[in-house]
Image 1 (cartoon, one colour):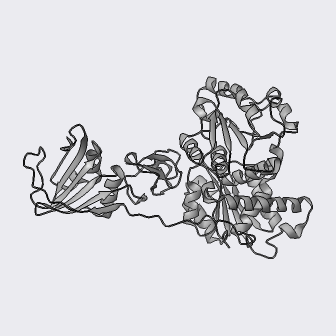
Image 2 (tube, rainbow, N blue to C red):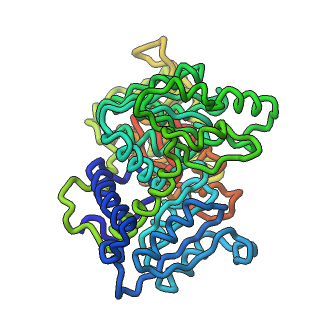
Length: 498
C-alpha cells in the first residue's frame, strides 16, 4: 500500500493523483457520516490504535476535527492542547516530547508547533506517521486538502479555476500550502491582494509561475473580487504588524463587504480558514449567512478529509489506489568532477607566489569568497602557510576572481563540500612536487549537513540555536547557486548559509 506509514508534513510530498484520491474518499466518508452509515467510516473497529494530538498552540477547528475524525474512525486519542500543565513548561524539547509518545507505542502523531520545520523534524525523528497541523508560518497541508475538497465540491472541478487569496499572505501558512497545491492543476489563475508588508513570499510566486500558473498581484481589493471563482480570505495578524496605523490601513483595505459580494460571479464561493477576530473582523457580519459563503462547510470538511488521511497512513484505506505516488528518491550527491590535467610552465611573474612543494590551489572563486573559505577551513587556527586574494584573470583582464593557496594541505570530502557551497564552479588543484597532480571542478552539493557553521536565516526555523531544540541545519540544492533549508524551505544563495 503506497500510503502506509506515510507522513503528511508538506504539500510538496503529495501528487495530484493522491490529492484527487483523498478528495474522492473524503466525499464518500462525508456522505456516510451524514447518513450515519457507521460501517463505512468506523474503519478501525476492533483495532487497538492510538493517535497523539500534540498541539503546542491554540486551535479549535484543526484539533477538534482531527479528534472527531479519530473517534468516528474508532481510534483512541491522547495528547494535549496548549502547553500548560505539560513538561514543555519545564523546558522540555520537542525531540524529548515526541520520543515519549513514541515510547508509549502511539500509532501516529498530529503536531501543531510554533517553529517552522518542526513537523519535518518530527517525521524524521520518530518511526510513526506525523501529520503537520501547522508549523509556525511554514505550511498547513491538512488544511489545504480540506480546502481543495471544498473547492472541488463547490465548483465541481479543480482545473480551469480562478482563485483569489487575500489578507496575510506573508505569514499565513494556509495561503502558502494552498498556492502550491493549486499549481499542480491545469489552467489555474491566482489573484493576490494584501498590504505590501504582508505580500506572498516571492519564492512561492516564482514556484507557481514556473508551474504555469497565471499570477496577478492586485493593488486594489475591488479589482480582484470580480475576477475569481473562489476568494480565500485570511486573518491579518495584528501581532505581526507593530505599527497600529499600518494594521488599521491593512484591515480597512482588505475588508470584504456586502457591496463587494454583489460584484462576484455566479457560482462564486467565499472561503476563510478561520478563526476571525470578533473585535476587528475583516468580513461584514452579514456575509456569514450569504448563500455564497462556504466557510462553515469548509470547516466541516476537516473531519472527512482528516479521517481519510489518518486511515491511509494507518493502513485502513488505500488498497484501491492506482495512481502516481510521491516516492522520495535518493539525491545524486556528486558535486566533484575530475578534470584533465594540462601541465603548464610555472609562471614566475605571478603576484601571488605558487606552491613549490605540496598543497592545494583553489581557483576561479567568487571575488572575496577566499576570505570566507579561509575562515571555514580554519587556516589560521591550524597555522597553515597560505596566500589569498582577489586577482585579475590572465585570459580576461576585465574579470576578477578569488584565489586561495594553502601549502602542505589537501582537502577532505567535508572541506570540499564547504568550498563548493560558498563558490560553486570553482577549481581545486592538488599540487605535488610543484606540479598539478589532480584538478577538480566543484558544483553545488545536493545536501549540506553536519557543518557547525551553517545557519538558516529564518529566525523562526527549528534549527536556529536560540530555540534550543538542538536540530542540526541541513541545506539542499535549489538551483545552480541557491540552497533550501530542508526543514523550513527557506531559499537563499548558497554563499549566505555561513
